[in-house]
Amino acid sequence: MSARVLVVDDEAPARDRLKRLLAEIDDCECVGEAADGHEALKACAALEPGIVLLDVRMPGLSGMEVARHLTTLKEPPAVIFTTAYDEYALEAFEMQAVGYLLKPVRKEKLARALLHAARINGPSLARVAAAARLEPRRQHICTRLGEQLKLIPVEDIYCFLADQKYVTVRHAGGEDLIDEPLKALHDEFSPDFVRIHRNALIAEKHIAAVEKVTEGQYAVRMRDRAEPLQVSRRHAGELLRRLREGIPD
Image (cartoon, rainbow, N blue to C red; front, side, top):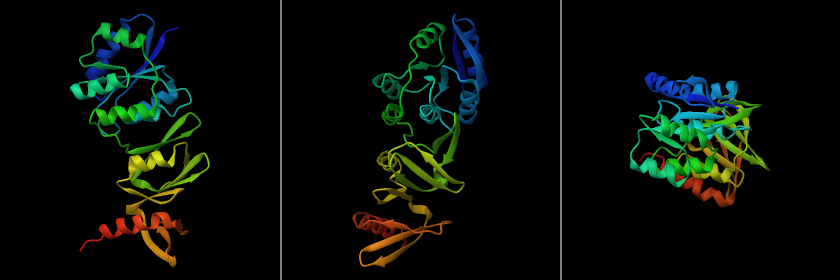
């Protein structure tokens, strides 16, 4: 069976070159192309490619972030990055055994990469991003609606609320469930989000008010949300410190 390949690059000449090379390689088929990250996610959902040739640097949704979102699919495609990055990025890809091709891509190396294409998980991609001095923090949170992917801008998120296995994301467009540990979300977004409870992580910029309930007990009201969120005694000190530091003199 031929490998079904999706080509993703924001530059048309780069996409055309990859398509020409794929046409010359046995047992592979270019099933489509995308010019940006959002198009790539839609194409993956519609076309179900087995392999994605993915440019690392693209405006908007970067290749690294696209790859992390693709890992949430039930059957994610293998990803081979195409990059013109320096030695730090290449070393990071190699350390995490992530497939990559250095631009301009050569036919022989492309054929070899397709033969050895493998799937990779989200934590490995996050380590690659950090080691390669790329932006390790996502700009969107991804949730699944069947096999469709929905992207929620992080700047629109009010809070993450954990409940057993899942986490509820409350945001400007409503609520969605994701399957990610609250601790991992805290580690990734802690510069702008603060833990107020073992089950709650909130966006500092969306805090409307902090109310004192009883001695040592507080509750937070978020913008556009009527119900308050309880602050545990353990996390109250950190919340109040962060808010004090954010108040101008």
